[in-house]
Image 1: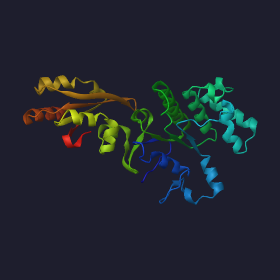
Image 2: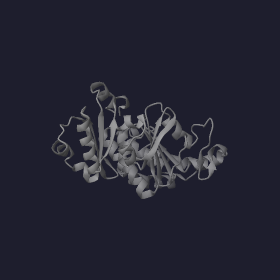
Image 3: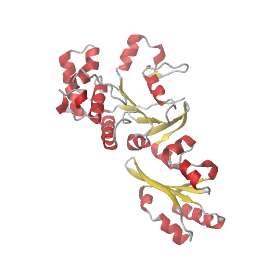
Image 4: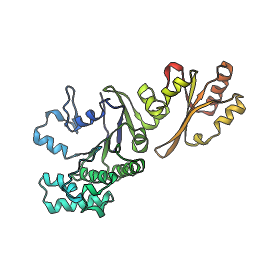
Length: 311
């Protein structure tokens, strides 16, 4: 693995279970030790830091987890204040800072509540506030939305985006959910079997996935279609205004070829609409060439998806 994280960005690491995503994340703050290689943080090799230096470095790395890890015996305010108290901050100052952070995550009315009285989304907001209590430069997010329903997931992702944009905190996001990547991330690393197989901007990955692992994430129905349709397939990608063009009618009217749509969907990436469509390519080579020529004239991105290379 060779990976650089840039200040102020939101980088996602995505892949199937067992790919090594969470292990990689935990190496960034040495919760896991690397068998070989180095982890560099601000020109310093983490593996060579003394315990005191490592603790000081970890203060600049907040972390949130899938299952929140709140202390049931402490109320919301005291959960958020805990890291500061452990670092020697006075109780009054720690609680004052915790109150500010709870206001940031829209939980100022829950300071006296206990974790058992909160919803899943509220618990994660408390966990985010706690992670911000030491003024980190990097926020490590380990499957932070996996235990939440879709509406709550959306609100948590919006909060993480706000933290990145307004506070300038760098986010390292581990997830197996492509919609998390599409919603907030600048770049994405695709992991498979302990290796990074692609590292690109989110929009470039969507438009032209190069690895089988990336294609399965972007188009999870591919294997089902491979079993149900054995012919050649054409994957079209639309962006911006082209996503709203009547392409299918153009193919029918101008190329004079009937169209069989196997799959279609759209995404919103970086506030721009992207769409993809999988068409059955005609067996007639002349008809297929007319379709491809039309796509070239329209300036649309496409790729041929042959039977043995199912997306």
